[in-house]
Amino acid sequence: MAKICIALATYNGEKYLTKMLDSLVDQTRKADLIIAVDDGSTDKTTEILRFYQERLPLQITALPQNRGHRAAFSKALEIAQTQLGKNDLVALADQDDIWLPAKLETLEKAIETPNKDGIIPTLVFGDAQIIDAKGAVIDKSWRNFARIYVDIPVKAHIAGTNNVTGCLSLFRASLLPLIVPIPQAVGVHDAWISLIAIKQGDIVPVNAAVAEYRLHENNSVGLGNKYSFDETCERQIAWTDFLAKNGQAISLDTDELDFARKLNHYWNRRTKAPILLGALPFLIKNRKVLFPDPQTRNRKILFSLLGAPAVHLLFGKDK
Image (cartoon, rainbow, N blue to C red; front, side, top):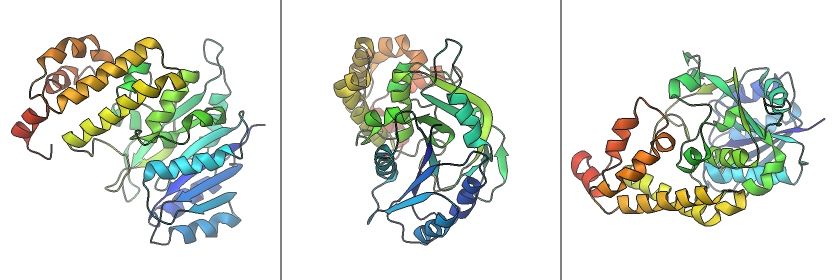
């Protein structure tokens, strides 16, 4: 039977961590291994983790200083890689959510079930109920609330759309050699993992809610873009440049690599030119992968014709 390893990243999480760990204790399918990497907490997070070592198969690594969400997960997955076989399974965990009791059982069953074409999935992901900072339910479906589409093409992943929330997923340990170390150019580790998973096999959505996903002011990812326009440009330039140069290693085909290069050129131009009318044919041609939501597509195409000088003039530097 395949082992299930949970990779947990923590940072100053004492407010919510106990409830999260209790939900791991209550799983109907117990984890075989939990690797917790604490990212330089200054509160009681590591003390709480050590307390739960009597109830959970917890291995704790405490980083001496804060390195960021991506780096903490990368470290946890690097440790996992040394202890797992290719047939084992990996789940990601955030410190502030609450897993429903059947989460691991539900996702394990889904990842071991062939899809309609007889292919065993490389990654599966469920839905979630949304709770606020106090634990009150905001919405019964994270997918509906955040307008997440369960089926998007590879080019949408390249463009930065991510439909896989890491804490709701389960994936094969055979992907780990391609995942770690998570590159610096990766802004969101979930997006990197899901891109690799879809290029190595098949991603399958599970309709059931498997967790209570907490939205609060300190979410590392959460809802919406937390970055300014200039920061978004910088992140997209780094991401698309990385994929254009290294995408072959994760099996991007010629057309996908060409798309990454053209997207990188577009984002570079967007930092300099006030208006990008020349980009309109590219945006129209690729509108479905660049802007998956048809209800906001036309508005986003129009905004995408504005470069940094125009955005700053119209909306201010902080946009």
